[in-house]
Amino acid sequence: MSQDSIAVGSIAGAPSSSTARGLWSSRWAFFLAATGSAVGLGNIWKFPYITGENGGGAFVLVYLACILVIGIPLLMTEVMIGRRGRANPEGAMAAMAKAAGASRHWRLLGSVAIFTGFLILSFYAVIAGWALAYAPAAALGEFAGLTGESSGALFGAMLGDPVKLAGFGTLVLLLTLGIVALGVREGLERSLSLLMPGLFVLLLVLVGYAATTGHFGEALHFLFDADFSKLSGQSVLVALGHAFFTLSLASGAMMAYGSYLPAGTSIAKTAIMVAVADTGVALLAGLAIFPLVFANGLEPGAGPGLIFVTLPIAFGQMPFGQLIGVLFFVMLAIAALTSAISLLEPTVAWLGERFAIGRLKAVLLTGLALWLLSLGTVLSFNAWSEYTLFGKTFFDSLDYLTTNLLMPLGGLGTVLFTGWVLSRASVQEALGIGQPQLFQLWWQVLRWVTPLGILVVFLHSMGLF
Ligand code: PHE
Image 1 (spheres, helix red, strand yellow):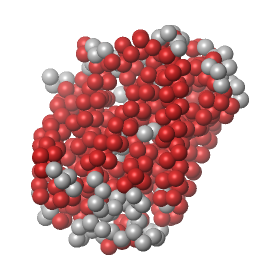
Image 2 (cartoon, protein in one colour):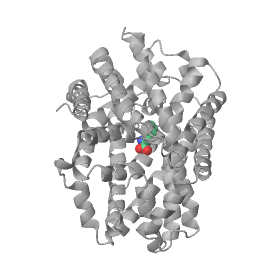
Image 3 (cartoon, rainbow, N blue to C red):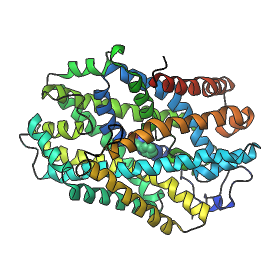
Image 4 (cartoon, rainbow, N blue to C red):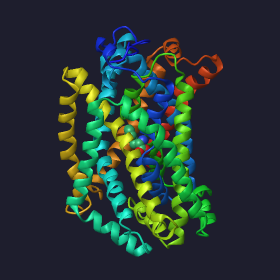
């Protein structure tokens, strides 16, 4: 372990193992890791298809509002708790509660977050496997001359093949487990500084291509003209859930990464930069995809297959499409991998610190459980597609439970804990916002606007007003 792995700035009562936990080498490294966690399938795969399913502009507006008044304040809170507690999310919550003289049970919020991340990873790996499967398909020229219909058929054939889905999903899991077993610092920091700009450039290329389809204006209308009559209570809940999902909140990821953040770095600035990068990638993905949807007579509300059906059509037609297609799906898979790592880290850190087992053992145990659970998602696209609970397949249920229920409720708990249980002075000190007015603004938003925002969305989604 390197010299700087001394737990500076941690509170008394945090586990002493914290001295051996390691730290990011710089604020920039933390920014890359947090952005790597935030930018992933959520931005490129999920954001476009849920926007399509929920009617476009009004949904995007609600989502942006959720990022601003709920996502950013909570992101800052989670990083702060991780850094102060210097432990896995459960341990960090316990340490914070103890230092504040509050009930030990607050640590359960950390436990639930860890479990949420674990559940998400079980399906996230399967979807990331789709991207991995599409990279060789692009290389082999399978996208040449695709139409809306034949592209849909190609995607359907993949979903219908459980062995292929399980194979690529397993590959993603193995890669994630391997990186986390080795410790994230070297590999992650280095690969991310190449990957993030690369992904951005490729997305710009795709937006450029989409602009040539003649349907760019239609896409702009769809994404940015808000027609609130298209917005149901459920859509608002989906927008809120997605704000959590895309910023990696309430799943242990940001708390775990915050626990490796050196003291003295500005949490506020970094959090805002992460949110801006994350939102930018999502909007670019929308601008790349919707022109193709409209140009090829596809349905915006087609569901989880949206980018896997639309983008290959573009790759099949554009100059150098074969190469760009491979690059795109490889980058998407890597972007998913850097998110998957952050989904695994909390569980592994928790097992290691709570039960004092080695990192490798913790990784193997978690990996086995994840793999078994991931088969449920694999089968929900084929053999089990008819088995549904409240009209939802196994995958849909996991997605709904984590993103639309556990994340918002867990986030609400963390916000209330910070705003109403911890003292103002201790939070101000831990957060390190220098300007008093700025802190005051953040503090009031966190105490009032964020929790009320979450509650209002919940009550609205239940049809209460
Ligand atoms: N934020 C990631 C994405 O948008 C997913 C994620 C969720 C990662 C929760 C970590 C924790 O793809």
